[in-house]
Length: 117
Image (cartoon, rainbow, N blue to C red; front, side, top):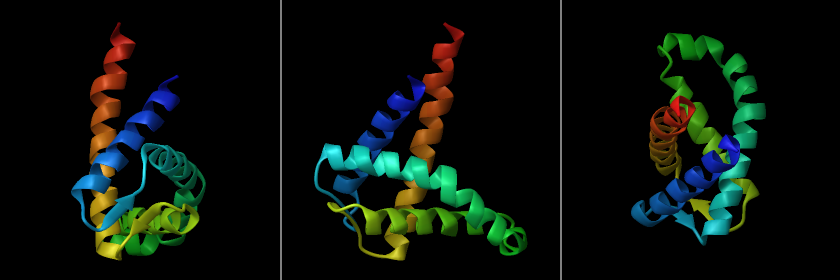
């Protein structure tokens, strides 16, 4: 159940950012749900591989290269999904940071508080 709620929240964040950021284009909420699902899949499968492959540069940059990996994941998502466009790497970077912050807050504040009930 938490996974579904997390996907729906991420989709809502994607929609809001699609309206707020001029370099991110999302056509509707169902596309945002697909984006959230594909991001979850790419983060589960591809991101660990990229982290292992780029470990030396990640260490040299004190972990800041992880932001680049997140932007690459967004760009890959852009290539797979029609109705979702990212204008440049920098928009993908900003988008990935904002999605990460929002979903991290949601997981910490909302989903964890339900565990306390």
